[in-house]
Image (cartoon, rainbow, N blue to C red; front, top):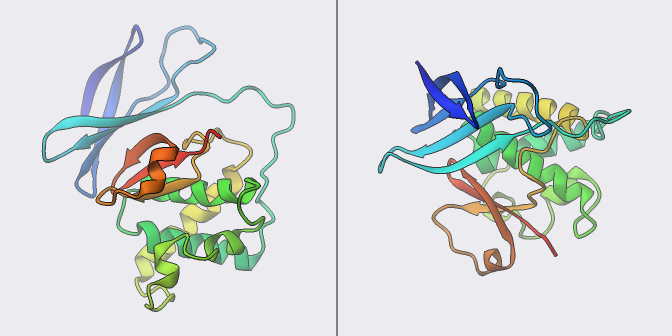
Length: 202
């Protein structure tokens, strides 16, 4: 389905898709003359129950880099597994965007001095991700969901350091039904599917 929306002063035709009970609106690059902060893609998260826009994520081009580096392109087999495993247990069944956000948060932690400096250590850091200490099996059992998590993990590993971070540097998230006390000390970025994402501005 296509609808017409206004991005700034530019009318664009966009594609609307429904994923996992939510609606996402994907807008192409505006067709007007390029501006320094030209919108590339807009994702609008719609609460299907109350039919209103809850959050929106706007992607804008990153500043030109002379030699962008895919920081995790050479990640080890073990780290690749840990990243996909974290995405699988934290966000399987959610949209691709939701799974990408979990992957970016995981890698953002690796790059943050407040966390360990490799993917597996970040994932298995004590009590940071609920699935790592829930007493259940840590082996993926849904082949389709596991294949999707691995594919998105690979895409994110290639993109990190080259593409703009869609999470704006988020290093935390929690389920939308939870109200953790720590969240009050962080900047809320966006809700995607069942997770709310935050970054630390301290």
